[in-house]
Image (cartoon, rainbow, N blue to C red; front, side, top):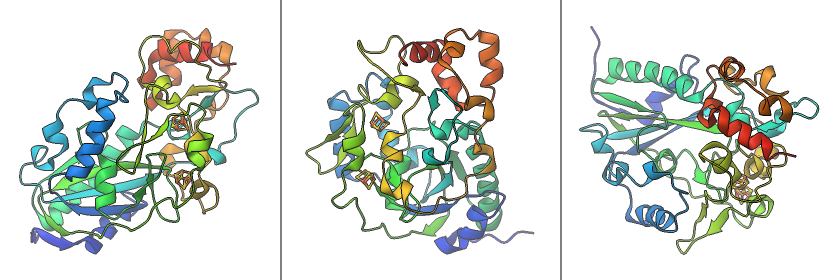
Length: 315
Ligand code: SF4
Ligand code: SF4
């Protein structure tokens, strides 16, 4: 018979979350309260500028997005786990290959994280009782906000979560729990005087705001355009060699260049078939070839038409 006490200290979660079965590199723990007014203002300001580039799902469910209780009734704790993927600088590309964002070179992170977080959620329920809900990029929950609240990292000027001493090449997955877990303290860190990612962004997509934070304009960001946009790219868009995504604001960041790289999960090891894709090959790819090549890959999000369009805009 299991003993459950419906509360614990965040340190007690470490063996569950960072053990080999789940494999999180690190985790944060926050109390499941309503989202801060300042953060809601930043998000709404971003929407009002139309920086979401027509991605209407980002405008919906604002009540759920600001209140975790709407996703899991009685939620007391938000646990955010970080899972390492390969850094862009570590990828060995074939001669003349088109580039794919390093996070997308292995298996689809949605499935990998869900499988691993389901194990964690079952263990949390077994040990401490209560209910859990796993969210991986599909529910209206802003992982980065909760990661900051839960002391996992801070938001860099590139808009990504920065883990101290480990950089930003991590997927984030969340477990909401009705168990009361003592939270971690948020970190007092920021980018200091560095603005390197802003200077290196090929699309000038990182914008200052009146809220003292930067945001990304998805109308310009090459990652958003190559992955999320349906239909034609804006007139005159040149992608150089970027077939899917853009890694520049990560690869230029000193925290991803000068710190020891965390070991990526085995599922995210780059598939050799994706390191050698040529422009002509993508332009002429059949649906059958596409389905075979990208089986179990997050790249399917762009669809064959989207990849062909991107290849046409490459040099
Ligand atoms: S992904 Fe690329 S285009 Fe988008 S903000 Fe980062 S550097 Fe700029
Ligand atoms: S490049 Fe500099 S400014 Fe940009 S996220 Fe990294 S540390 Fe922050």
